[in-house]
Length: 158
Length: 158
DNA sequence: AAAATTATGTCAGCTTTGTTGACATAATTT
DNA sequence: AAATTATGTCAACAAAGCTGACATAATTTT
Image 1 (tube, rainbow over the protein chains, first blue to last red):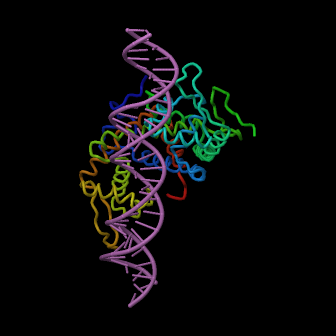
Image 2 (image 1 turned 180 degrees about the vertical axis):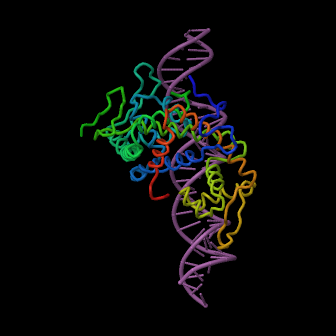
Image 3 (image 1 turned 60 degrees about the vertical axis):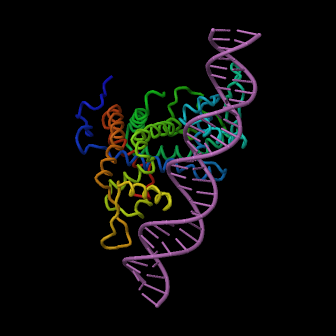
C-alpha cells in the first residue's frame, strides 16, 4: 500500500537531505548482531562447529523434512559451502537424511535427537538475550520489533 | 524433558513460557541482517572490496581520528585481520593516517574525500531500508527499535 | 523408449576474512 | 637505562564463502 521510498521527506530520516543517513541504527544493528551471534559460540566450539553449522542445524530443526535445495535458498549460499558443513553434521549424527517419498532424488533433512538438543541449547542464550531486550524496550515492543525486522528483510524471499 | 514444542502453527512465541524459545525473532534477525548487509555489496564489488573494508571505512568515517587500537576494539577482530583491509584502504586512497599529536606512536585514522563519499554511498541503501522499515512499523517504532537494538548489544563495550 | 531435466553429490581450486605467534621499531613511561 | 606501549609485519593456518565441471540417479518430457 503506502510507504513510498524516496519521494516524501516527511519522516525523520529524509533520504534527500545531505546528512540524513541513519548512522545510529546502522551501527546499533552491527553491534546487536555481532553480540547476538556470539552467544552460541562457546557451545559450538566444544563440538568443533562454527556459525555455518549453527545456521544449518537451526533451519533443519525448525523445518523438518526440508530439502537441500530449500536450505540453499534459505541460507543464500552455494551447494559446496553447504555440502561441507552439512556433511559434518550428518557424520556427527546431528542430522539425518531420508529419500523423499514422492521424489526419491530429494534428500529430506531431519535433526536427530542429539540435533534437536543441540539446536535448542544454541537457541536458548539467544532467546534469553531477546527476551531481556524486549522487556527493556517498553510496552508493545515485541510487536513493533517483529514488524520492523520483517520489513527489513527482502520481500521477495518469503 | 518434554521435548517437542510448537505444534502450534500460530507461532506466538510467548517470552514468559519457560520451555519456549523465541524462534520467531531469532529468524527475523537472521533474515533482516542478511539482507541489510547485502545492500552495499554491489558498490563494494566495483572497488574490489568486501564487507570487512566496509566496516573499517564506516567506523573511521564516523569517528575521525580513531586509532588502530580503537578500531580493533570496535570490530573485535585481530590486528592482522585489520591490517590487511586497512592497508588496502590506505593504498587506494580512502583512508589516511596521521601520527598522533600527543603520542606519536599512534596512527590517527581519517577518511579522505573519496573515503567519505564511498562511506556515504554505502550507508545510503542501508539507511533507506531502515527508514522504510521504521515507517512500516507504526508510531513510536524508531524509539522502540533503538532501545531494543541497544539492549541486544553487550553492555560491557559501550 | 529415448532424451532432457532435475536434485544431489563431489572434485579441484580459489578468495576473503578470520585466527595465532613471533618479532621489529619507534615513542613513551617508569 | 629499562620497560612498556602502539603499531607494523612475517609466516602459517582455518573457516567459510565462491566457481566450474562432471557424475549419478530419478523424474519428466518428447
